[in-house]
Every structure is written in C-alpha cells, then in structure tokens.
Length: 411
Image 1 (cartoon, rainbow, N blue to C red):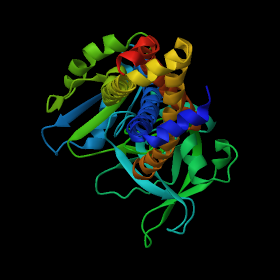
Image 2: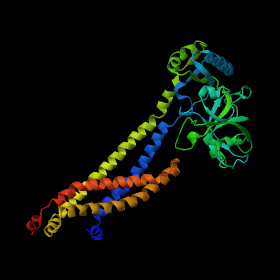
Image 3: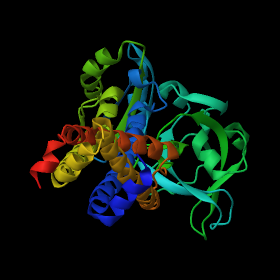
Image 4: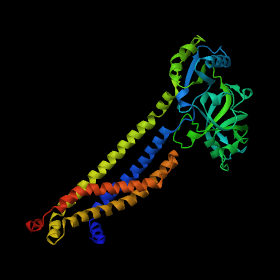
C-alpha cells in the first residue's frame, strides 16, 4: 500500500493530523525534559558528598550568655571530643555538605574585579580537616596549625591560604589541564577598593556544597578557609568516628558534651546519613512527581489515539467494506491504519523535537540545568512511535474485521 495516497488522504482531512500531531508533540516535549530532570535527580541522589559519610556527625550548642569566650569554649570542647573513645578527630565548622545552609562568596581569577569569577561555598576548617572529614586530598597539603585563626561575625573573609575543590579550580581557571595545576595560584575576593588574594595550597576531589539550588556547578564549588568560627553564643562541631562506632557515638555525645559546660544547650546530634536523607528528600519527591506526570501524559496520549482512530474506523465503515469487497485483505486494512498513524506521529515527533529543545534551552537559561542530550529525543521518539502503533492496533484490528457485506448494507 503506497504511502503517498495515505498522506494525501490525511491532508484532505487534516483534523486528525492536527489533533494527534499536537498531542504527540506536546507529550514528547514534556516527557523527554521530565525524564532528563528525573535522570539528573537520580544522579544527585547517587552522588557522594566527598566525605566519610558513614562515620561523620554534626552537633551544635548554644550558650546562655555571651560572657563565655567562644574561642575558649571551642578549644575546650574539641580537646574533650577528640579524647572520647571511638572518635578519630573533630573540628569546629560553620556547616557541612548537604545541610541546606551555609556561606558562599564570589571569587575571581585575577585582581581585576571584572575578571572571570565563580560562586563557591565556604567551609571553615582547621589543621585536622582531612582527617576529620575523610577528604580526598589529591594535591597540596592541609592547613597548618599556625595558619588557623578565629573568625567572628565582624571579621572580613580574607584568608591568606585556601583549599579548593577540583571542580572549582577547573571552572575558575579554564586554562588548566588538571586541577593539581592550580596549586600556588591566587584567587581574589572583595570589592573594588578592598581586594584580597588567597593562595591555593590544597586540592580536594568530590566535595559538595551545602546546597544545590538551581545551579549545576555550584554544588561542586567548595573553598575551605583556615578559621575557627566564633559566633557569639553558638558553636558547631563535626566529629568523625571510627568505623562502625557512629551510632554509639551519636547516642552518647550530647549528654557527654553538655556535662562539660552547664551554661548552654546542646542540640541533638545529626549523623551524616540523616543529613543526606533529609537533603535528598526533595529530589525523591520531585522524581516521584515527575514519573507520575510522565506516566499520565503517556496514558492520555495512548487513550487519545485509541479514541480518534476508533472514530475514524466508525466514519469509514462503508469505505472499508467497499475495499474489502474489491479484494483488500485484512492485512491491507490493518497496515493502512498503522501507516497512517505512523505518518501522523512522525510529524508530531518532528514538531515535538523542536518544542523539546526550546523548552530545554529555556530551562538551561533560567535554572542553569544541563541542556537536553540528543539521545533523550531519540528514545522519546521511539517510545511515542511504539505507543502510537500499539494504540492504533485495537481499533485497526476492528477495522480489519469489517466484512465486505457492510458495503452493500449501506447502499
């Protein structure tokens, strides 16, 4: 059966072309972008935070009075925490990966404030950083004790040395072939009248920011500064336990720490697995919601095609009977409807591909997400063509079963 006569028939009655074509186009545009977002969310859920996740916890305290010196409290607490059985090391922090809150700043690759810059998360750390968090230090060295200074809310962030994530230095210095080549380079921050440079002394791999937001890159941009946070009444500590000791440590550390200073409130410790689960809750919800949307759209698409093809079969009953009387086989009738649907679906897929890329470009410009890879369009087109043929089969089989005598009954 020739395709050209079938296409001519479609053009003479373009309602089906418009209805099914637009339905397929919109479905393809939405479904492939939704699947891309689902894939991104699943990748996020599998991503490592870049620390020893199974053996790290965080605990906070708030003093009743500002008379207690925050730096003295921090040092006393750290000495005590490091002495506990099952503790590898501990340090004062402002935040940790995937906590959802923290500090960030803009850093530039040169002294000129208008030079290439990136946004980066800021983590406070001391000389125990690598051991406390279990970081992958791929180049350089940790902080030295003499480089670590207290930092209050009134201070300006002007560290002489920093440790940066591999992703951050590669984005800040596009000329680098390897992140290790950033050692010794300077990064700049501050306004036009108050510029300060920091030397990169270490590179860590895989560390994540406290938040993701809508940006793809910010999640991988991290800078450690050699400071002990001294924020008036509040203190926060990261503690790394020996393997298998995290739950035991989490069950006792609050009471043990509170007993060292009765003039404060110590919060419940949060193990990093708990932090991670809470952080990824939104990704899980988004993935489930988008999966439901995709399934619903595909179901509506199938039902729409079934309904419209069934309507065509009813309209063309006499015509089909006449063709059967003139010698057309059931296979000819079935093939006619399948080819007709394939042509209409193909037009819809072509239009949908354009809409999908337009939607992807808008999402990329507005929310900094990755653009849609081409293979999502290929898979989406194959899926919709397969569903279109599947949806056409039932009414097409009914059409193929029309007897030649139907033509004479209608005369």
